[in-house]
Image (cartoon, rainbow over all chains, first blue to last red; front, side):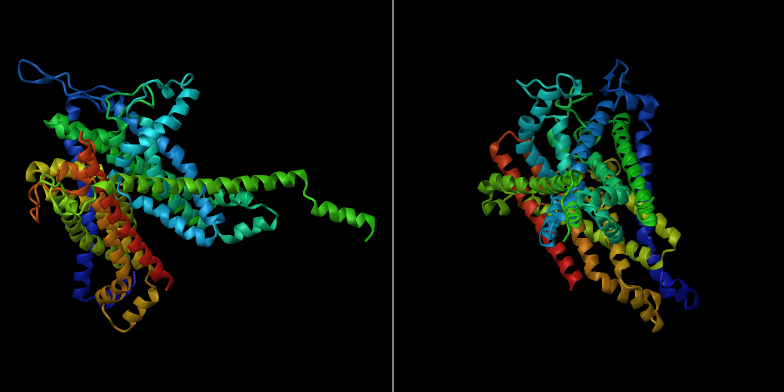
Length: 327
Length: 291
């Protein structure tokens, strides 16, 4: 930006050379992105020769088929409904817990915590984001999962399980793994992201808006409820969406606790699978263009959904920047 | 003071029932947000304590110097594998990412900036398994399970991180410094390199280190590409390599308590490395910002 005008007058070849070299970096990124799209579309194509995308999205049967007397594969059907259900369920459970706790924690860090406390607390929350997901998975599989089963899960199942079919569980023999526990683990993993983004947007609310309302006699909570939350709303939604995207794509930790069972589970407290965990646990066995195509189709769905989320967040955040939150 | 004035004063200072309710809500909410903050840091404390508890009995010095099939088992090959994979990843994605970031900050027109930033946003949101699948589909049939395929997948993931962080820190360099340099007749490319990049260098390197740390913890893409091995592999990226996340994942499914214990010990080592890098880097950034 600094050089735009000068480049025209003093346009030396060294300048345009450097410009091209650095521009190549950006081109590589864009080409890599385009390459991802082309690869997924190309590799998933064989699948659509034997079934429609509607079957892929609405069937919960995942069958590689049988080989008939002519050596052809027949009766193969790749329905991802079970995996899609698991992804939706786990990521919604994650957001359900992480969004309120994360936003409230961010409010505490910005509005209530004394500076001496706020700095280390913020630091600690950010450290959670630095822990590799396989470590979260190991911890959950070895400890957290059982604790959740005996506390929150047991409580929900015994309180609501009789009225709500998806929340039932046999108290005598709870399942070894469950969709709910995977979702709760995801909540912990995306929490730092919710806190970090919420904190930035809450901090960016102009001090004059707060002071005006305090001057009218509002309590601290009233300032938060009536001024800060409405002003930062778009940014908070953006942060939760970003965290949702992270939860949808998280693979290894989920694979370690969800149980990797086929089909749509009868209850959230039964084992299941997500799109990502299905890829991780099935891709090694996939052979032949159609089976590989089914894996590529799973990858393509993950890529499409996270891309949509990234673009929506981008639009939201840009709108926030333009209007300063007052939309 | 006459009576009416006193009662007016009393009315003004004594809280009404509505006022008391508002104050009560305020107090309740203050406690509630404090509890939320406590809940937000609780998992970190629980996780660290539990990993320590499980890992320490298995953390003997030989664990760092032996390979999985040795008499006294260890994870030397996973440590060197992780360092090599992450190291080569930042050696590839670092220069490309920094170049792209410099271009976006110093040269690109607003339209190119908008397109580039959108592409970075999309790439940042790509789940790591997606990068793994692409490497598995395209590279593994050609190269086999190999370090190269793993480095390709990790580079797809770290490239946007590098580019974004470079662009962000270059944005912090005051425009006046660039203008001063240009006014002295310094060419644009030298200004970009010796003024902008030089000023932002600590921040750019921070981005490189954080990308390294990110690559170190990735698991899913490695399982499909580098695959893991019991052998020690120095710099042969054309064949399978071991890595700490692979060891944690594979051993966690094992039936033997000894292997599960080694998974915990490896998790502790990986976690300590990741947290140390982050503490050092973030501590540094905070210091340089306040100084």
